[in-house]
Length: 156
Image 1 (cartoon, rainbow, N blue to C red):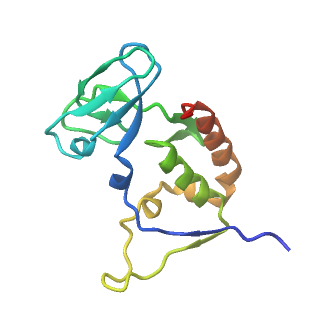
Image 2: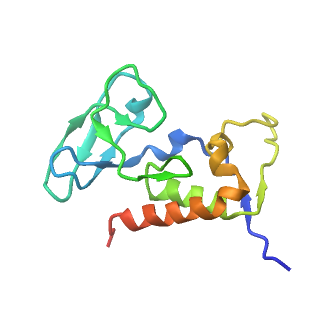
């Protein structure tokens, strides 16, 4: 019998992952970290940018998310992105990438009714593009996730 891998939707929305975003450093093109990125959802405020490789530390405006349009220009590009299934697979950070991986690996995906709000589709995984959700793309998406995992900075 085939092993059942289960994923239970935790109802985290994409904003739950913006505490730390891995971006391409505009100075050295290596992995930098954008923190306090709540303003990326509004057009006000700046994000704290720090690069451990070249020492860059300053404020920046916006993170360019593939497939999303902003009304103001973005200075920063995501570090974790790769072509996949004719589109772009991206993640803000290691935690979001792990969530995508867990979801895609699962052959049983559960969502439970919220006791107060009932059924809803505001969670990050319920809003994943259909090409990521498709079972016949599972193998290719997981290969792309593995490629992105190899790009993760060593946090030791």
